[in-house]
Image (tube, rainbow, N blue to C red; front, top):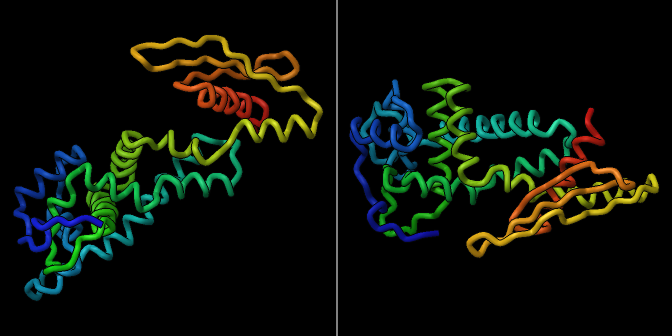
Amino acid sequence: MRWNFSSLFKKKNSNHQIKAFVSSAFGISIRDTGLYEQALRHSSAAQKIKPGLKNSNERLEFLGDAVLDAIVAHYLYNKYPTIAEGELTKMKSKVVRRENLNMIGYTLHVDQMLDLNLGRQEMHDSIVGNAMEALIGAIYVDKGYVVTRDIILKLLKQHGLDTRVHDDIDYKSKLHEWSQKYKRIIEFKVLSHRNEGGASHYEVALYIDDKEYGRGQGGSKKVAEQKAAKQANDSLFRA
């Protein structure tokens, strides 16, 4: 959690402020400003507003959570056609977890746009992450699935989507299990190793029974080996 005294009580944003924020954060012009106003309104502020205005961002948060899940699931389904359902589920969870949404929300300065009235309470990071989900819901209602998908995938990739999903699957272990079962010999060979500006760079090849099945590059030998192993997995187990 973080203390954010400037956000413990805030008046609602003007239409101009909301339009400028959404344009800066997501690169779109909006149709229904009220949707985004609602997405940025915490329940603490919704309890104080005049009758007739829209309520808190909780319903849009619910919708945004489902849309985010669908976008990431669709992306992983297309990108990794050989990965089983259980592993895809783990990969998706790694991407959509609360800490990532909180971080993206702070990066986009969602916390500075929140309409809330917490009094002397601390502002939890989850409030920012929840608002981020609500904004995804607002974009979906306002602009449709395709625009929302493109925006969210761009944001996630900027924040390490592909790196995070690779953390959840050990391609080397999968290959070693397969090789033991079928009596095959696996060997990794370092093709090159250089230092550029203090950073290492490796290129590694993976051989199975003296035949090359994959290559990978990375800032460490381990990363390069995993990428080579992924390429070999894709070649061996392609549907």
